[in-house]
Amino acid sequence: MAPMATPTRRPGRLLYFWDVKGTCKPSEIRMSNPVIVVHYHEAWLKGRNRRFFLRKLSTALRQSLQGIPIDRIEKPGDRFVVSLGDGASQQEAIARVEQVLGIAFYALARTVERNMEAICRAAWEEIEPLSFANFAVRAKRSDKSFPQTSLEVEAAVGRHLLEKICAQGRNVRVRLKDPELTCYVEITSGPALVYARKIPGAGGLPANTAGRMMCLLSGGYDSAVAAYHMMKRGAHLSFAHFYGSGAMPGESSLHVASGLARQLVPYQFHAKLYRIPFEPIQREIVRYAPENYRVLLYRRMMLRIAEVLAKRDRALALVTGDSLGQVASQTLRNLVAVDAASRMVVFRPLIGTDKIEIMATAQKIGTYDISSEPFHDCCPVFLPRMPALYASAEDLDEAESGLDIPGLITLGLRSATLEQFHCSGREIKSEISHPGKFSGKKSIATA
Image (cartoon, rainbow, N blue to C red; front, top):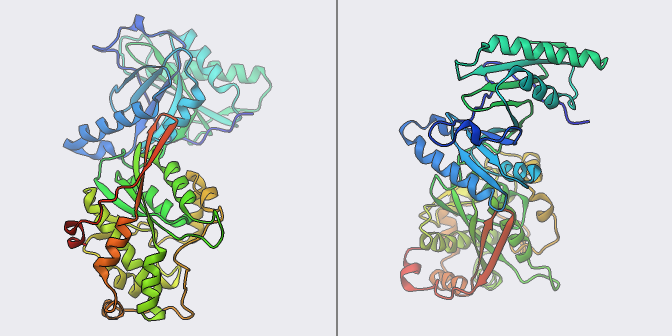
């Protein structure tokens, strides 16, 4: 039995239509061909900038659907309509649209001829396999030449559906307010559209609309979820991952970081993952700095190196997965003291989020299992017995006084490797290179 449709209120209903003006004639649209109707999220609030956001959303739809036969993607009014071509997998197309940021809802709709018999038949085919106790029909007649009004269409389709349901002996009634299931009928100057199952989209803003950021990506749950939240706000992220050699062969966190980047890249289509070996830098910190400040000094060095990489990528801010008070290094005073090492703004989208919420989002976006794999996290290496809880920027500056900060930045940059990811449809390609030129004097001076 198919899942029950979600309740829908009439004032907020989604009604879609196919715009045939200037792009195609009614005869060019093959009846019964499925279309995906897409209602976007926040872009309609953008006023004079709306075209920019909708252009980005259209591009994201096309990129996500690459490899699937698509006849056309059009934007009739305040929604997109994707016409699937011959041989297109509906399930695959829906799975692709699910990851497109900026979409509030989408639905697979039936296109039928503009007569009541065809509309009633399509409506019954649409709702018959669904389980529900009450239903309503909502119609919108954008083409006023259609002989029946919207209310007449609703009454005729509703009566037909109720007769078919009663003939099956099902105990279902009509409910106009807050129905369990709503069957939508849209009368356009082309075909009529009929659908009953709306699917929630990813929400947020279209990809690559808010500028570039550099995310410090660990192998854990938090940083990947933080990256996803910033992607939903339109940011394009590159990633910096600091790794240790591992206590046992194969325990390095590189495979986890690569897997996380691969899982996230479909949301923005391409990404860079900078991989920086961190153990040599940690050994220098352990050698010259007080024990209780070690983890905080690790994090300051990570910010400095990530800032250099961010500036080379023309990124404007850093992103971390910190959650206030979650561990000793994430107390308010410690976060402020660590941030003082970087002149670049640090965003923490999870700062007020608890671990349960973070892990739930990780499961939703598919990063939970990747982060659950065993790996060697570099931060607990040489972990102090009593880490500082309330450090100040001045405390950490003094603790670093014996360190060669520019030299350690150079050490990290010279040993970094770069993995680049490119997503086309469902295919994700990656390539690894050794940049080797991240340590120039100009870069160090900006850190």
